[in-house]
Length: 127
Image (cartoon, rainbow, N blue to C red):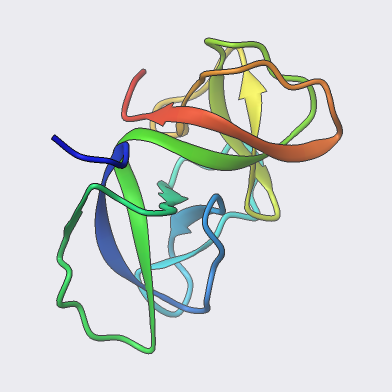
């Protein structure tokens, strides 16, 4: 049993990133902010407070715990409907996509969103 809702793993990042930020593999370290629309090199979302954290002893200037499975808050832009697949939208955000490419899916939205920019809960690791 766990109070929190995701399984995460630590990666060396090139900067400090807030929970909910979408990251991709690349940059000066293992991961960096995703500035690519529909990136196929998506690493995942920075976890808020994982139930289980793998690679917890990683030593780096900046460490990002990336959610691999479970529910996490994700920064989003644009309209989202519950159940839609989420891909990178740039600037560390996600957006809904009906035709994602292989390797670009972050997860599925757990709630609707009608605003321009905000945070919603997404199930990562589910295609």
